Length: 247
Image (cartoon, rainbow, N blue to C red):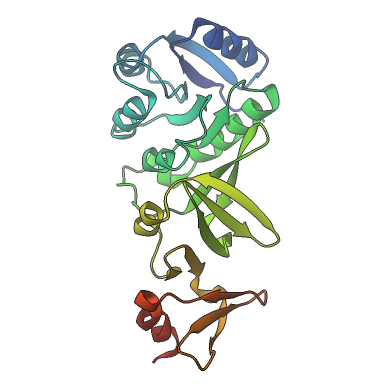
């Protein structure tokens, strides 16, 4: 059986040492073939047009055209490459959904992280969704959250509840919780309303995670969740939540 062809890879970063590190890491991944490097977004777009890479390892914070701008331009093409962000900042993870990036690696990038990202890129490149030219949905289907030195991928449907914590949100997944740098209002607009419902100014809950509604007799309602926890329902959200029970 013939081995799959190596992914033609373009590295984009405005820091020479970061490029050097990625070049060294790529040299130890047999499934990668480095076709070029770029030190800014404009050069990256020109090289991508000339070289048609399968994969772009892309920094975010760059002068002039930043990584998000590069990714948006590339994703609008007829045969967009797979994008893996390699950055020192975890605050752009949510924005990465807009450009359908396959992974988000925090610097310093490790060999293990790169190998996993390459595997994800290969799966995406081989998928019918990637081969077809379709418009990306604005709905959030998954989250990338910082965990130790990596970004962990979590499917939105696995999130039980989301609580606002100042400039962060706590995503509860079973017995574990993860912090994401984003405001609740921005997230609410991106979540599928058929799956999630806001019950309080600081809480969003997955609809099927609500087991029942309870009234305390004093005008206050609570959503009782599948894990036994209760969440006070804000007055401005009460009518919408009651609609779950047909009331």
